[in-house]
Length: 428
Image 1 (spheres, rainbow, N blue to C red):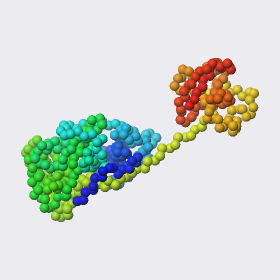
Image 2 (image 1 turned 180 degrees about the vertical axis):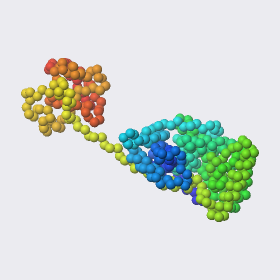
Image 3 (image 1 turned 30 degrees about the vertical axis):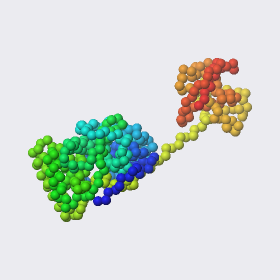
Image 4 (image 1 turned 90 degrees about the vertical axis):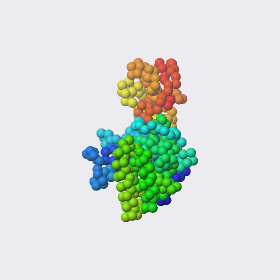
């Protein structure tokens, strides 16, 4: 078999969102996304709301497959709302109006029960260059070494991680020598065990000529107290003349030696005979007994999702109709004695260019200093001023009706001799 080389860097383009894969689960579909080497898993609604069990391999899944990709299209439309790196998990939900949104959640990982025994490696020190969704489908670089990365964030992947750790720990220090070198446990930023790394797998497929080597290696594994449950699926390599086991979570330690002997007859001897017979009948891969996807994954085969741009904010306007409360409740608009071109809202091109300088006396932070209706009535009018204080005071600029409110800071409070007690001047 020709292995795909492990690149020295990830070929997922920066600032893009890649779809790594997911689980087309009728009850809990998941979607794994990647952006700038940060992964998030999104769980969607059930593909079939009426389903209570998983379908069998003979059931027609056309409808649920279409629903899965419909959810993926919805997630694609909502990508701009996802904050990668803030959480490791999110949910796609539908509200009562039928609209979808993505709700982030930082899911606390289920702790593995197997004690650690090897070096601890920070996830930040490992560069993943071959990305995929499954537990054992990533490869990369660590300390200038090519490594296979076993990485578990979801609950069912945590189960595989725990099993693999128990099997490897049981064989640690034994003379079996059936696995690639173990480099260390992977730690998340909060100190949680999220996986481990090993020497990158290499070698060739087993063949009919390797029957004696495989049988003798499996006997050594049974003598060490373990059973390998992936014999029938051809999860082996021959590396440097030695057998290597690839499905690490299929290494199961046994306490009951009698049960181990009975299971070895079936899971080792009978399963190996069946596999070799498939080689004779169907060729070097038997009945589709392929090696793990990470060994043949193409790092350049990246599925990207469209990053739709966030809509621009409305420009808004700096000259907006006055609040009717001020017009009719407080009676502040006194138009007597004004010429036509001085009346509010009159078309005046000279004033149009200066509208951006008009400001409402409005303070959101210090409401104790804001004028109340009673205070306005006592004063007889509401005075609005510009920076130059030579604008028409009857122009009202109600900042509260602007689509995006900005903070208003009170600059000063001045005494006045022109009929008002206080003049508050604000600026955006």
